[in-house]
Length: 129
Image 1 (tube, one colour):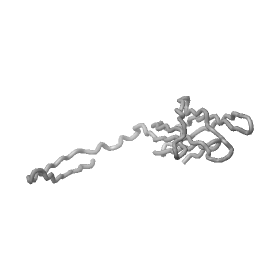
Image 2 (cartoon, helix red, strand yellow; image 1 turned 30 degrees about the vertical axis):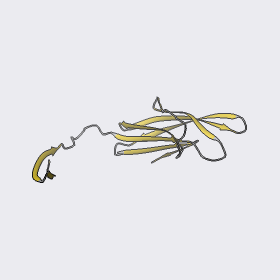
Image 3 (cartoon, helix red, strand yellow; image 1 turned 135 degrees about the horizontal axis):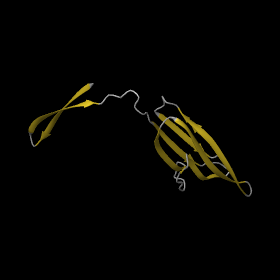
Image 4 (cartoon, helix red, strand yellow; image 1 turned 180 degrees about the horizontal axis):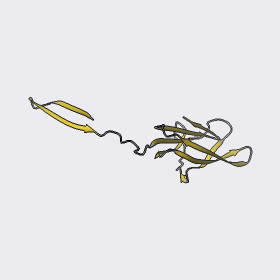
């Protein structure tokens, strides 16, 4: 167990006071559930193809899409998940010369040793880091 002692020097109205606190950091239990933090970012492609994401969902949960901000981000979703396989699905609308909708689906694998997974959906492409 770790014992951490914090000492603060407080200067207030010309008086000096010393405060000491101690607490114990709880150790990780063997066999305790391990979560991975997952961040999903949805952006439109900024080129002449006029490709726009109209719908996105992760494991059945809809990702709220708003008009893009100056960086092009349409929506974000932050989750804590157990290791496993999760589906992600999104629909893209292309104006070429009339609107055409395409649906995409991918399975995301979260390994037991992963602590952070960053997913970027950009138009019809997905990047998992």
